[in-house]
Image (cartoon, rainbow, N blue to C red):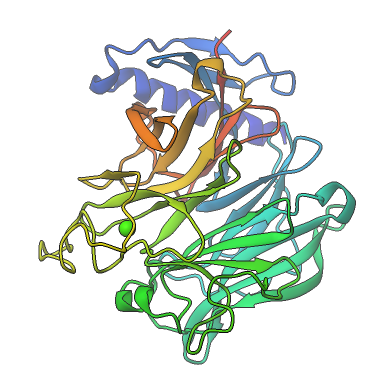
Length: 398
Ligand SMILES: [Ca+2]
């Protein structure tokens, strides 16, 4: 443990050194400071002056391989998935456990593998988590969601049950999605990507590809889902016409589901997802294909929903979080989006259902941001997407 901490401190110092040297940051206010958090004795924080707040960014832990999904346990510690197929516990102080036993075999290829994790809202009582992964199949692979009991003492998943198995299998290894969002009423939203080469399936009601799904947390289908009882339509579908949503969260003010979606070349989107609506992909988009060729019919059509915000060029959004009640008071009405290709944390100011301002934060880290969430302690937490992935914590600089 001591050695690990020393190595971490050296890595952190190296990072800070490169930050200070980065020409893009010469105007930013970056100094060295000791993290004031009680659980860290040697950790240093990176201080950044943003438009509305001076923030401290500290490394909770590092050395995670392609961390993908983050969940907060009641004691302030973490569960984190690594895309190659491992689930780990991380203590508040940053100690990383051995991999959990009982995690199913995943098809770890390209963008696929062990993806999101979300805890049941009643986790303190039932210790239940939902986990999404890409399952190897004879016909390629497909998305599966399990529910399982988290046994922290034995570092094991127990009582594992499959609650969703994607109908479609495929051999491509891009655009899987997947984010999991349980609500307080016993429903679980699942964002499923179009699998890249099968984008037209996003409009096919007989396919799970390119949809937001809504199931009961026991795996059954809610009777009030919009396509229940309709011929040639899968009953789990909640909304249609999505490309690859890798950010999703409930708006604490309205209870509605907000998602971020990757576009192709341009056309990344923020959407407010509503029952039965069609969000257009690949009929309409604000982007073009990677070749530069047009996609679909243009950027608007009656009956197809417009995003509330979009990016041209793309930032590659992953992770989405609201900050209501968070530690950084001036950010309380902001929505945060991680950017992979964009290598930034994006802050969006929102008034009702319109984005009124965008700010890009942490651009000097030169890190792909895979996930962003507001913790129960009100800090923002990020996962960086690399072979030496980190959990970062952002709070006010005092
Ligand atoms: Ca759209």
